[in-house]
Structure formats: structure tokens, C-alpha cells
Amino acid sequence: MQNRSETVAQLMRIIEGLMNQGWDEVPLSSLEDRLAQEEIEVPNLKGLLQELVGEGALVIKHRLRGEMSLWPTSMGEGLRGNR
Image (tube, rainbow, N blue to C red; front, top):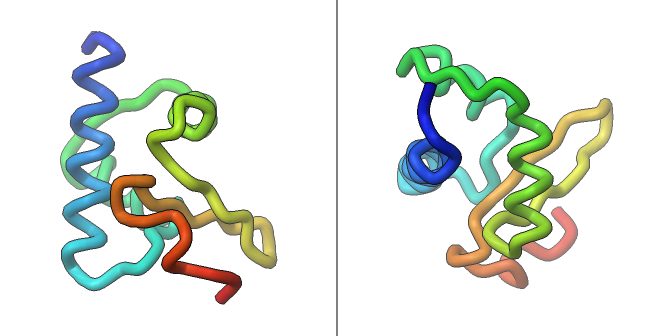
């Protein structure tokens, strides 16, 4: 089992990689798909994401139909507005 800092580093690498492929915000479902493709297990993904929001590393936007999207604060919190 990885320690938290390794897991967070992998998670942020994946999120930033998806954003570099053209996503303004990364849908949680796409993040989960990529984690599965890379065979990375994150036991409590939503809990970890909430911790990262609390630490100021991520922004999460709750969408219609219960979907969530997210992005690192390093990518600019104010750039997305209310899309």
C-alpha cells in the first residue's frame, strides 16, 4: 500500500495530464476511469479529494445529475466561472 503523499502525487499527475489533453475541468468519472486504466487503487477517493479541497489543492464543482468535476487550484480557480 502506498503512503498518502505518493497517492496524492499520482492523483495530481493524472488530473493535470487529463487537463493537458483539453479538459477545463476533469469529470470524476474520467478520473476514476484513468485510475482503473493505470491500476491505481485509491481506497477512499472521494474522501481524499475532499481532504485535498480542504488543503486548498483542488476545487470540486458539483454538477447536475450528481456528477462532480475538479481541477487543481494551481490551474486557476477563478477561470472557470459558472459553466
